[in-house]
Image (cartoon, rainbow over all chains, first blue to last red; front, side, top):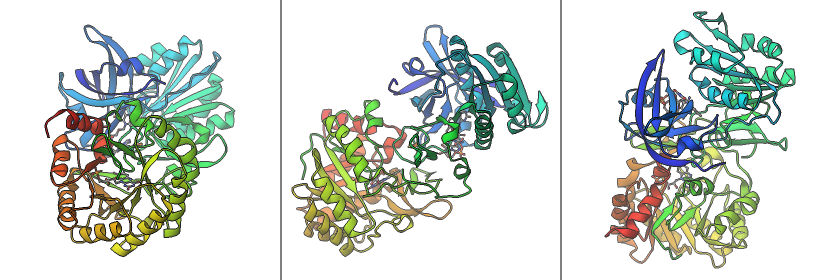
Length: 278
Length: 271
Ligand SMILES: Cc1cc2nc3c(=O)[nH]c(=O)nc-3n(C[C@H](O)[C@H](O)[C@H](O)COP(=O)(O)OP(=O)(O)OC[C@H]3O[C@@H](n4cnc5c(N)ncnc54)[C@H](O)[C@@H]3O)c2cc1C
Ligand SMILES: Cc1cc2nc3c(=O)[nH]c(=O)nc-3n(C[C@H](O)[C@H](O)[C@H](O)COP(=O)(O)O)c2cc1C
Ligand code: FES
């Protein structure tokens, strides 16, 4: 894997689409190293020490600048609001690409990509890579409502079949990922499932994939402090290849991990402190 | 003490395994790398959330997650040594005996420049670690580690309690420590009340005061200053106060290149 960079980027454009702010950020070197499933850690608001993690939604060539990063920000707290308010030309200190990317299948198999909210961001560039390898791409996009549905139009271009579910039924079917994923998976006859979204959604997808005998890769978001593997502040309880329970760093050994390796019940915080050796 | 090519050192527990910083080119020119505090057996660490952001600080209670001594010696140390880094191995434990055992095994491993005993764990009891409240507790641990460390210098990282730091520094050097690390985390609490440590720029003035106290009381004892350092000017303030070296911790979590940048500034610029 190529090493990440720590650099200063510049906001080339910032536009509101529904509930999200879409930023295009030129960050020399970072875009070139990008693989779907990796993220950037961004410094926010001067005095705030913890960094904010953002998925890389894509890489776009911008005239005169070379490849630029596309980021999607949902303003939910001080750091993400600050990011959403950055004007064109603003400088952003960022490190990336960080973390383990989605693993691609060696054979041209049928795949299902499940994304909820802004977290669907890394699935779009993944869909592209999968299609390049001859994999059939089916997409299941979910959101609380239409405003939080990421790039549904773009989705129709990059996938063979797109299913949309919203909690309020404002677009697509009414419901949740957990309600529909088993049916969509069966219909797609997918052998590999990729998922990105809140923990309960990932848990549901991993469970359904396992039942169906499909291989799953989940992009797990945990609160991060550094994002670079230095602080051990992002515990992710997993079961290792050797069958031994471990706690790994979500930012470095993740964020993408095999769905059948995550100890989901502990992650949901039902049993704080439980877990084997690091 | 160890002789350092540059006074800037990566603080314990803030540099990952070293590989993460190396991948960013962020170990270039630094004086030494301190490992996270190692224990005899693997530790999963504490429950989430482990770290919270506060104005100019981070409150942290990681519970010393780590691979345990055996895996560290097999997979982490050789790599660090191979990079040509001056490696300081920090250690902790549940008892004086555990500290001694870890020190004994580290003393046999090739390539280590010094041991650092973490006597400033602000959330020790919550994580089943030895709670070093009194200076004489610290002295007991240091004496046991020094006995096993053979020729390795032992650095004692003492509690940054302004009123007692000079006394702690005196008893640990009497017990055989070659130098003291002054200005670790301040005892604090996470938002939910769990015991934790406070680090970052918020603690810098306290750390600087602690360094001053130790220098005044024990002019002959080498002091390594630590706490909130994020610029070359911060580092110079500690060096001007009489510290022989400085450690950079929290600043790395915000900008992983901080230590390398300060090291370059100090190497190049006027002091
Ligand atoms: C790998 C990864 C990728 C992400 N990608 C995106 C993205 O593309 N778009 C987007 O809008 N958001 C993304 N997030 C979530 C985003 O990082 C958090 O919403 C953000 O850090 C919250 O910061 P805040 O100051 O706005 O809010 P606050 O809730 O006030 O944050 C306070 C603290 O908690 C941490 N924190 C809180 N929630 C999260 C969370 N869910 N994940 C990580 N850290 C958190 C923050 O870093 C900060 O230290 C991602 C998270 C991860 C882990
Ligand atoms: C996330 C985190 C983990 C830490 N882990 C250790 C540790 O394992 N051993 C130790 O001696 N100090 C540890 N520390 C303390 C630092 O080494 C340092 O002494 C302290 O944070 C003050 O310096 P700073 O403000 O530059 O971080 C840790 C600090 C942080 C923020
Ligand atoms: S967030 Fe610091 S190690 Fe993962």
